[in-house]
Length: 245
Image 1 (tube, helix red, strand yellow):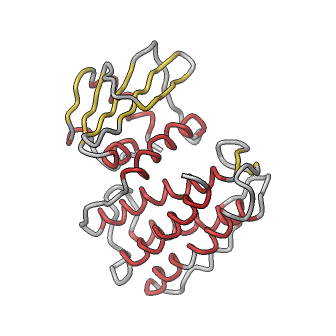
Image 2 (cartoon, helix red, strand yellow):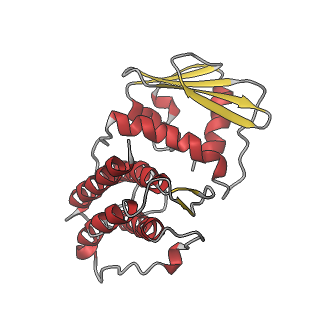
């Protein structure tokens, strides 16, 4: 996807998620985000949109802390869905304000501004799934978005340094394969890992129905016990324990 496609897609996603939570009890717990309520989820995701809109729109070169963003939160729960939806167009404008190659601050280091467009779409897809699960609904993620989301996670995981991680090895391979034809192969090395789209099995291979299943597994929103796992389950557990964002 290009910069405009990412921006348009995330704006549409935000509107859809706002509609999904509108009228529901925001005190409802979110099982996939332990300790969070639906209100916490909406506030977190909406605040992320607003920070990204500023960083991208102003081509910021320095870190912008969430606490520095004026969120304008609603006075009561009844206003949260509209508040969330109101973040869509400012984010879209911010993501499209500069040439996609313009370098800005990101938590993964200086990156082209299109990084934020991709990050927002992929993050919002996962949090929309969180909301659906909290509401007792089946998450719906477009297969192309889900496949890109897996790549995006694997691209950025080495820079997510807010917790200790051990994603190294001696050539061991982990494979995730879906019935829709989307597949990924991760190879561990002493200094990190590489990944590639691939149908090859690994020392451990996980088989799912869709790319969305792979995305939700990698984000810890699904459990591996619900899928077919072939091979070294200890290797898979080590990956899962160290890769959750």
